[in-house]
Amino acid sequence: MTIRAGVTLGEIFEASYEMSFNREWSWTTTKADEIRHELGPYQAVDIFAAPMRQKVRGTYEMHFGDPYYGHYYWYVHDVVIDGPAPHPAWDVRVDGTTPVC
Image (cartoon, rainbow, N blue to C red; front, side, top):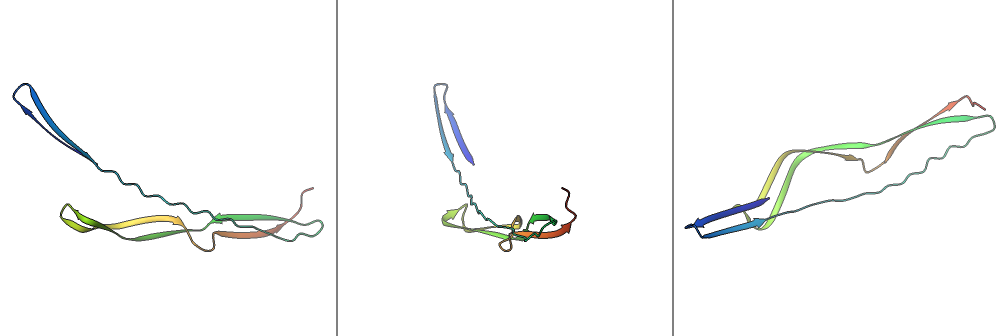
């Protein structure tokens, strides 16, 4: 967000004021899983894995140490966040199949 204000005094002088505000949030999460399936001679399997996701809907509440536009608390309503589910990380299905050799 950038706020600018300026004024011209006569034809020679010009005064201006500029203020900038920037805030960025980020986070990362890494997960690792291992899929094991015992196979005997002349056996084969198809493994299907899909990441588990979750959707959260709610209100985002922000707290400021000093008043921001006259308020210490600001609310953003009807926020929808879609992201990975905490546990289990994967939905796995193992199906036996005919080997092709």
